[in-house]
Length: 239
Image 1 (cartoon, rainbow, N blue to C red):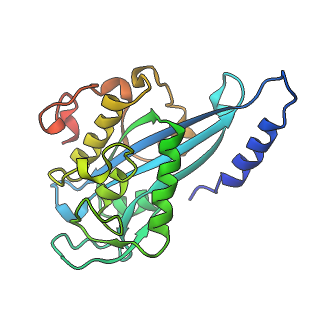
Image 2 (image 1 turned 90 degrees about the vertical axis):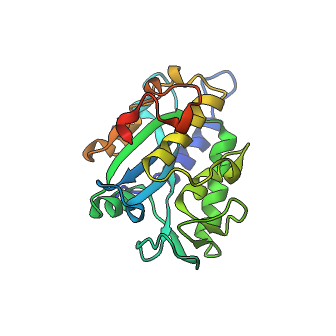
């Protein structure tokens, strides 16, 4: 499991704001990586959607020297055993990125990642708020949840709650596993204030150690910036 980078990021931010007037200041960028996994053949209890949010802080053109602060929204039952059709909510747990990868690979699920996408600081901060609710002990897990109550949530709605415009209501559970994650990724292409085709953040993959995993990576440049029926074109290979 990767060590926490938050204390270093906070310290570096302090140094950035301490620069004398007229000298270079640190840059700060925010990103999200959307993940989806599913078994082959696909079984509902072996599907998952999660997202990792990253803040990069540093100075100069070489982003590999930037300090990273990252967290993940990956909502699962505490037992890690998904009871798809259960109507009774149960105690949930929010795993970090590496715990999630370990869990889905134990289930022999295949993993795809869309992104990284650049996001506004407000979206990053909103993700911290959702994570705080999930980590508070008040939230419960149910494999099929409604859009209304964040305190009872499935993995898809936990991620969708970060959406500052539509929230959970824009994500009906007609997609699970990779199609659900692909649909969320498509929303970043359609509604982002940034031109995601100009976002080059592939350096985050080795920095987070993701190149050590057999993850299929779909960068923004391969994702259409439009809606389509069931969000299945052109990256149908991830069905």
